[in-house]
Amino acid sequence: MSATRSVEFDVKDIGLAPQGKQRIEWAEREMPVLRLIRERFAEEKPLDGVKLVACAHITTETANLARALQAGGAEAVLIASNPLSTQDDVAAALVSDWGIPVYAIKGESTDTYNRHVRTALDSHPDIIIDDGSDVVATLLKERGDQIKEIVGSTEETTTGIQRLEAMQKAGVLPFPSIAVNNAQTKHFFDNRYGTGQSTLDGIIRATNILLAGRNLVVVGYGWCGKGVALRARGMGSNVIVTEIDPIKAVEAVMDGFRVMPIAQAASIGDIFVTVTGNRHVIDGEHFSRMKDGAIVCNSGHFDLELNLVALRELAGSDPVTMRPFVQEYKLQSNGNRVIVLGEGRLINLAAAEGHPASVMDMSFANQALSVEYLVKKKGELPPGVHLLPVEVDTEIASLKLRALGISIDTLTAEQLEYITSWETGT
Image 1 (cartoon, helix red, strand yellow):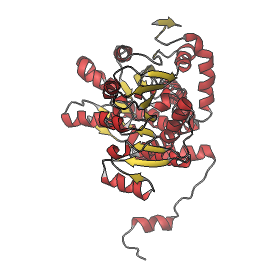
Image 2 (spheres, helix red, strand yellow; image 1 turned 120 degrees about the vertical axis):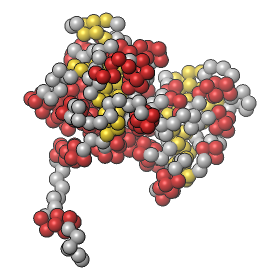
Image 3 (cartoon, one colour; image 1 turned 45 degrees about the vertical axis):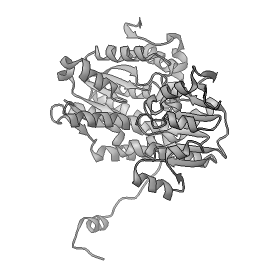
Image 4 (tube, one colour; image 1 turned 60 degrees about the vertical axis):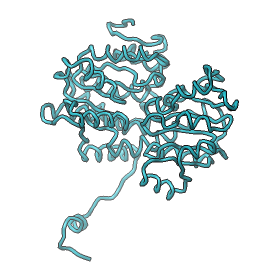
């Protein structure tokens, strides 16, 4: 841990800052909505004096969110939400060029990750921006005396919202939390188009394989799974979907994909992508059925979607690293090799750069406006999980269209009357 310009930090190499600054500014070109919000924040200072902890993937896009929050007057501390998702040059630039404390190193151990979470909480934040709800969970388990200081939190992911809802059901969520992931301008676009493209980007960068003609199994057909399946089909893969939800399974069938249980798909697939937010959706029994050379990766939130402990037991030894982010396990029972990418962590961030900036523009616009909303509504919102008002969603979409130079129609007075009146018939 070091200090530069009186800013505490723990990054890999502060000397990487010039490269990181260039990449942050490059991403900004694709983030016009967040830029407009930053410009307004700079004038109005709606977050003046607010102390923030942001647990997120430390990428160029997150850096631009941090800049917007800083422009609004917030004092932010950034930590990684995943051990392999940090871009070290970006972390260095945030410290060196913007004076923002960052505690994040690509490849950090679980112990270091947990230490960074606690270090961030040492700043006594008013608001927590979370990605998986680890910071909120740690606060509730270990920092009960700080709960009264929290105005609220925001949550970026499906997995995190599931944890928050479990907290709410258990009666232990003591403050309002904005479910950013559930905003339409987030999950319809970030999860579908962002995850769809960046997941395949990570697979290709890690392996340099051809996707065309391969059987690619998508485990989970939520918005992320839909995006992966759609993009994989576009690359020529034969896509198979596994699901537990009958409605999503029917949707996958109607979308033209084969649907079957993972136990059946295990022996057919060439490439497996998990996007469920649940644990051990690919388990030991599934690994044991896979063909020689099967490739397995995760694009859900936590690496426990893959039961890697069971896989290691099946192999009887540690994996062999074939190339960066590619580990080969050789099964004792039949000699088949199972390839795991990115140690089972988010492959789009472990081996690639995460979602493109243009889609994160809307996601992080939601984050910035959620923080502003929490500040404005301080003391008014009851504890529990909340959605951003639909007007905010609409505003973000309108700003995005404006930035793209696209116009749309508006209702005439006659049309508005027709759709809001019961008296006017056909």
